[in-house]
Length: 342
View 1: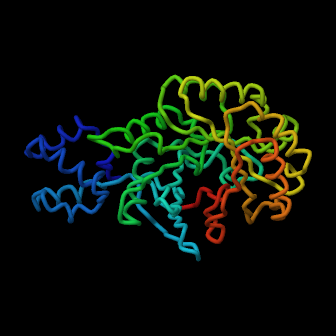
View 2: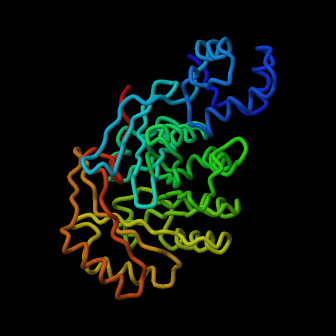
View 3: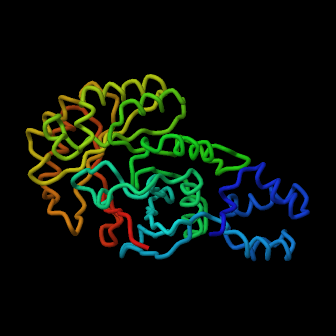
């Protein structure tokens, strides 16, 4: 199995080029091609000597991921690609086009151990964590597809980011790094979590200005325990307390994600309970109509019911958005990503 040069740190690249009798500035040149120019084709790295390019091409892989399939939605606002890893796993990544540019939805794990009953990612369980450089490669491959820089990164694909804490934080440092990384401000990065209380508090101490998105999905512990197994470990009171702590430490408002599922959490009573629960919280609420998964029986509420639910929250003076549905026709919407077989 060939190694990926994106996985090499600065010292490792310096050592590699020394062994190849190359000057140290080759490290900077190669990294510029890999990251700044999102190029994974050694033959195009024209300021490297031809012989060196041939050696690198024969012995190494540029990125730890290679695109295997690409799907585009009918409205052309969503691209989903599957990428193969060096250990023959497949993960899915989504590009979303907005008025301000592209946002990329990354996977932080291969599979998922959380077992949320409405989510396709739970099927097959967790295989392993993604490395920080596999996350970086997802961004770079997305940039290859659109031919430009990605302005916003969301860690909302497969997996629970806070259960891959060390690699996620390392990825965030790569995002910030102006010299060896993306040079992307962390205010343009969102991390989703089901509510891993100790890790939310640990992330708060990193003092990184990311946006935290809480996957709430229920207005009370009774319903939440039915659809999110993590609720057996952390009560709503504990989760919201951790979110308040995050806000206090970072001054970054937490986003609340709420998937509306017909006859599960979409009633007027649920809306009123949610309004009461969040009335004093510094949160913006994203209502997400359930996206169908072919092997699950859940359904989205009617548009009328969704608007009724949103209106109850707005009358309670809460900030609410009903998320636009993108990528349903290619199984690229929220909750539809899954691990594929190689």
